[in-house]
Length: 235
Image (tube, rainbow, N blue to C red; front, top):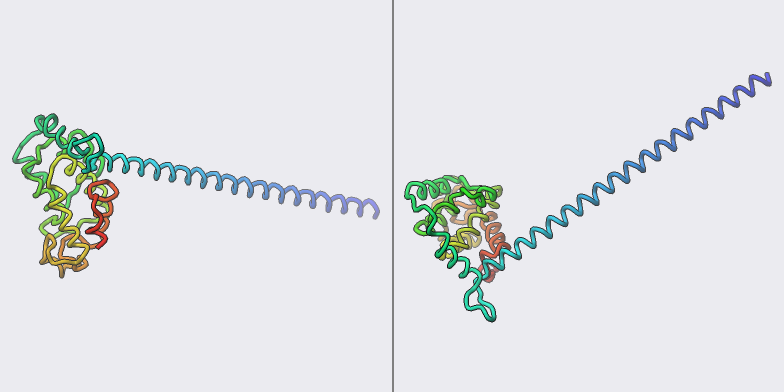
């Protein structure tokens, strides 16, 4: 009996030790997972912060390039300088192909907008075509795609903004043709791109672009330096 009791006690102690080790192992594994998750969140937060900083830096540089104001010692603004350089150096090498230019405008009117990468590619329309005679048509194509039959989607905004940056950088009068229509869209004025579309489910803003998209575009225009006077928007 003494032997049996001793054996039983030893078995109990063995099982307790196994249970203790199992719990320690589980706790170590839990802590390891928590540490791994924490490090992943930290890395993700750092990446996100670096992305924000990088984007802000790019926007600041772009606003500087598109600044219409002159500075002390400079009679020509950065925007005027960019346009002069374009007129004197780049424009001469561009194609004034009627078919290609009108095809580009029609593509925009159909609601097919380029992505940011497509806008900046070396063979994009904005970089290969002379659109100086189509400035107002390009602006109109953006605010009334498909003649009001289609809508600009939120996913189209980055590409539209990239396109507008390059048009504004090159051609005078582009923003002046575009912004008033977007302002009318935000304010719900009847002077938008397509007055007949007010009853077509587009927020009733008199434009083929929903009011929220008009506001988003105007906000992006300010961030990117396309629009510098915020007073009309704030009103």
